[in-house]
Length: 593
Image (cartoon, rainbow, N blue to C red):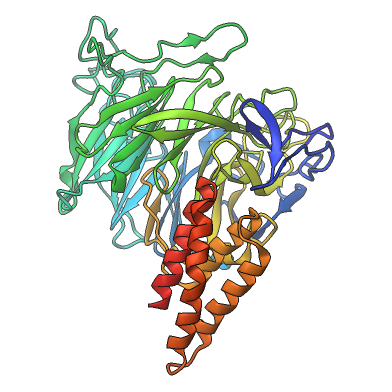
């Protein structure tokens, strides 16, 4: 990386600054960030880390490329999914399953060659879903490509969503292959709360429309002349869980339609927003749709717009609102906070294969945009971009990440390709701040090689990274001034049996002392709770934990006696801390019962 001055850590109302939670803004001085100037290398690059530790790394298996990036995107790792003690890693060349029962000793279980595009994966029960978009995908998953010219119609070609039975996880079997007009770049799984025997797949295709000679009913016609165009829609696929082979498209909702006229091309038409602005893509597709079934909401990152959807009827999602941004080139992905009051959209300026985090690149381009959600409307609050400038030989832009389930805070671990991993807090939507990072030097010191983290997701206590060229990495957070040991321990209490980033689960915490202490640490850090108050409250909580059966009632009474004053103090705190006071008191009372 360049040894030049670096960016400041977060963007607040257009000003790029660094801020500690609850404290005054501080400008970070050039030269302080160890990510600048790292040695290049495919397998021996320099490393910089703060407040997180690399605990395991595993290179790609044979047949899936190597760390030098030889073969380019044809062998690139892509997205991750999880089930139990298994990690599923997609790839442009197929997919790999890993055993993560012991995350520090991750091991390969099985590899399946099956090309056809980036191969994003999701898992539900004993079914694995895979996106296929490129023209080299075959119905039979073969690696030999499709017979004939690339643009010639072929019954061998597959573009859409594959479904595998993974009952025997070492021997996945394809049981369905749902063809779609534009293929599937990504997809999202949507359970139906009214019908648990069915799951729906929202397929997002970003490729060209195939010929109707290859798949009947496909048209790339102008929406003003052809109401049946395959553009300006998504695919909704219904999958009967007892008979996945019967999966089929059941609707193609026009979620971009003009709400007044009904014109199906009703959102951003493409182009610039004026002098000094980005050229934003036309909204005729979604790249990613993140669904939040418990709230009946979805956030669509849809090329030229970010949209909020009502998915209470999964077959017929309805657009609630939309936003645009003069600094966004391509709306790429979305993440809600846990209570659904905020949403982060990413801008994949440069498509993920270009250097877009250089010192000369604007901090609001290729960044995250953070919105609050009020009355089903999205209100812009700030940008966040990786705070360490990268070199011309490092592809870098905002990409995929997930929440870290720390109670009382909104924290995300995010991939920035060769910019590494950035963990940041956006509890205050106007003041996002980085709290941890990991980065390697570029793969090459003299040319741009597409590499770096495609996705970084928290799953059951660890952060897993899909490294495009190098393999799989596993990280663990370390206590710091930004994140306490209690907060990390509370986050580890959230255990999931399955995790797909685009099907966001709602997380909750048990009413146990470490959760109460996590809130206590936050209130102390923000200087809302005085140190002597925290000491007294912690001592009373410890007394209840350690009390014998005979002494517990007295210990609980002493603890309860402290709470009214704490509640009163919380009533006059700022909204973020007030919520923490309420949650802390409720957790303590729940434990005391």
